[in-house]
Length: 333
Image (cartoon, rainbow, N blue to C red; front, side, top):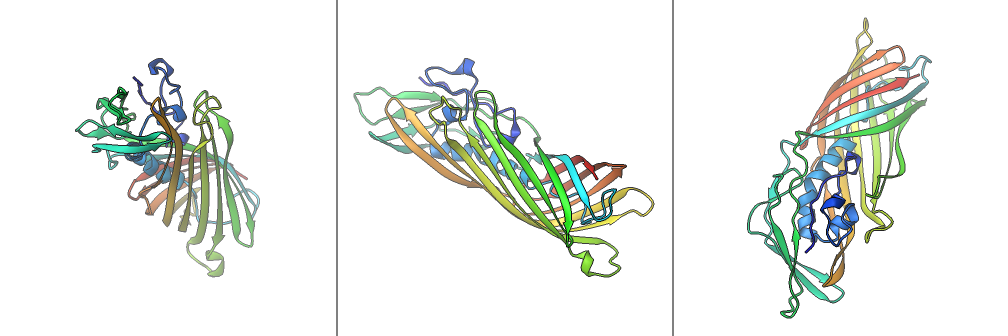
């Protein structure tokens, strides 16, 4: 019997993962993503993790700007440097909490395995925090006993899925600035490693409009996240490869008598996740892969930022398939 009591990494930058406490594992290295996925079928993993992909896409495409002003924010005119952290939270109230799946076939090196699931609602990662029971794995050979695996319960009983990302911005050149999000490959205990890179380029439109009463700008962003299993796992290579892009139009207006700026924007975005792992039981081994797209495509957002000397604070709210709240704190020079 293979026990699969799953939980998420405490690090929600790796939102698209399943991990298992070592104390609950039997005869399988399931204390990290690669081990956990090794006994879950493709269709089950796809349904189970889709809400995580939705939340991750909503979060990573949030907090991309704090004003539409390009140049002139810092203490040196037209030269800006921003170093800070953006914190985002995707609201989970509209996320799917359950799905139905009777069974699936997994081709292996030695034939085909059939997985039979309980005839009831199966929780997603945001679903009921009780396991729906066991799945039965059969190699369709009457002389070989079936295997069983405990199915994971819902893992996050939360109204908001948080994420924090460091970011650095610099500009301007011909009314253009850039912002980088970067996390080098970082090992997370026995769970594996995660890395993140993002680049945003923004261009001022208000510079072409004499005496414009507001600041206007457009911005393009591309981001990539990679998650790999630990070195001693059956899935030690890259398991999750996620990437996405966003295009937005921004507007902001500063209050003349106070260090306050109101801002907003419309954004079109896409975010996708490729998952690949090795499914393994004593009856056979198979390479499994699938793709997911986050539900968010269009968002409208509004927020406010406050600059106190060199400290800048901001908060905004976005309406989309997954509504998102974002806040940031940084130093602007």
